[in-house]
View 1 (cartoon, helix red, strand yellow):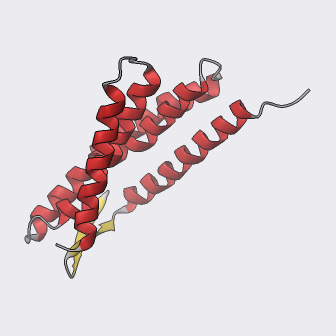
View 2 (view 1 turned 135 degrees about the vertical axis):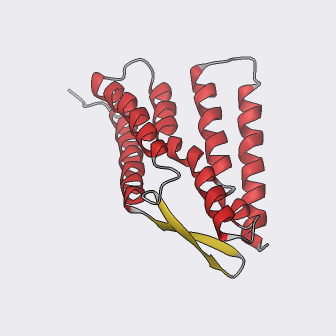
View 3 (view 1 turned 30 degrees about the vertical axis):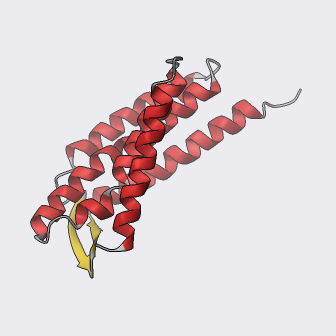
Amino acid sequence: MNINTYFSIVASLICWLLAIFTYIKRDNSPIKKSFALVTILIGTWTLFPFISVLSSASEKSLFFSRLIYIPAIFVPSTFFSFMFYIMGPEIDKKGQIILKASYFISLFFLVFIFSPLFIRNIVRFEQSFAIIPGPIYVLFILYFGFMYFSAQSLTQVQAFPKMK
């Protein structure tokens, strides 16, 4: 194992502890629940360097790497949902449609998680692995970026409404 492996474990533990700390507070608001969920998903996804080196066999590493991408698939949806709750009930229909569509798109990617169309293979570099993306993985990256910028524009619209 290399230093990235250890840092991935530490980062995951920090995310999980933050999520647990946030969730166990007395106030069970949707904001706290959605923050805890997105933080758990990110923390789990952060384990990729650790999970990929657990097995020296490429097939097992590929399987575990694909498995660890299941939480990653739902990060954009849950992050947008978290931002949705932060902005309050004034979210327009467009934001609600994007939120619902994002969960359906995440489910679409989930169908292909164990397919070479999503992650074609993995390649070993010294003591770590890197994925070789399939064509659907490229769509996932575009989706990830779209959801990030949608959340950013949502916050800008809500934080800085047009002045009359």
